[in-house]
Length: 337
Image (cartoon, rainbow, N blue to C red; front, top):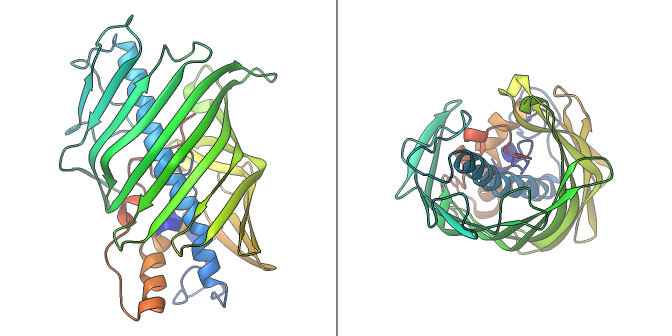
């Protein structure tokens, strides 16, 4: 389940669409998972977290862009085409003008706004609260995001996300410093994942937005759903592009992440830059390959079910965001640049 958010990651992503050929022991093809099944699941937690936090980033960014274009007047604010949840969200701005800063923007999903994406129902509820200190491209301006009882399906998202605009870097890309403090995901089964992170997002902006490219670097640490401390470092910049086969949503197509958990190192290799490239997991000298279509649909409903069935001897149908991961409005990635 959580794995499904992996490729859509970002923002991430959002992001996080990988049809895992080795994720389900009942599958007709692909290797089964031996003793490393739990380690693989835990590695997937990182990707799931990417999706959820970056999904929020995408929503925040698209909202700010639309409001900015309309002078922060909420009566004319429309969500971008990729966002289909505008039918029931309520957006308010404390200073609805283009001159007064800082501003506080609230996106309120109330008791729940649902959409259906690729057969999966994605429901958001609660509030995303955004503080913007200045116009987006003023050097040093910040976007600070917090959450109030905010859920995607059964996953509650908490933490403080701060994005600071650093201006253009040596490559001529727009550069943003990103931090996440006290990040916390609480799944429907009661398990908790925490994260604190520091990183950089570079945006290579083109005249046509679909041709933009995002590069991510940085590191993070926290406690996974098994109560174990972990570290995670991007050792080769993650590259995200809009992939036509995923309806032009952001997809990680290159880069490498190294995670350490109890002295076990996991390497996630996202490929060489092609939308058709799969994802490789290397754990304890064993390699697992996921194709970008498999992953999102099969693992979406497999991961938590199998993990808790193995641990508790019973099924878990609470859906830790399950269906949502697959991708709702983001399906394949919500990392927005």
